[in-house]
Image (cartoon, rainbow, N blue to C red; front, side, top):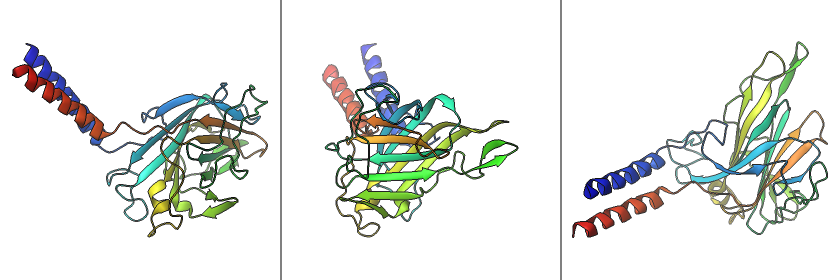
Length: 275
């Protein structure tokens, strides 16, 4: 009976490792996609600054791209690329003409949360001002809306669709626009009879492409897994309305290698028991 239990344990571990090795799914909702939760954008310890009063649960992840992943395109996004990602789930859901601004830095970045509650944030979250540190990268995308029947409606082709951002900026003492193809964004909207509502969003940065001489020209890039980040949500109807949320450490997906090693440990334990 004990042997059967051990075999079952090892089989379960191998099954988990096999699932982890399969393609990563992207829905535009980081909670559904299994990313790491950091906190709500308006909670002390997560809130940085901004009077937008936008509540969203913050998430991050990092992973290695495979040829079966939706982000893969065979030219600029390749198998083996290291991807960093920030995201949010609106809490509560509300209408916003959304501009997503994902700011990626190193562990030494000066991004920091506020000691005051919204809307009196005193945290550090700017990018062009240098809080991200030298080599930090910002991914920026504005969703397009039209007024139809007195309501703000999302333009076609943007809902739950992987899109190239408007700009990707690199900070090297000044904010410099670089190839927007280094980033991707994906959001989920609730299409209603009235104005359409933002539900959740994901922002991706291809770290490997930035440092690849064949695709980028930045050499060694600072943003990394375990780096600090700032996920900002702005309302383009009023450029003074935004909320910045602190992500103290971008957390990677559990590695398949680690799961396989764990399964191997189980097999070793079983062999010792048999002896």
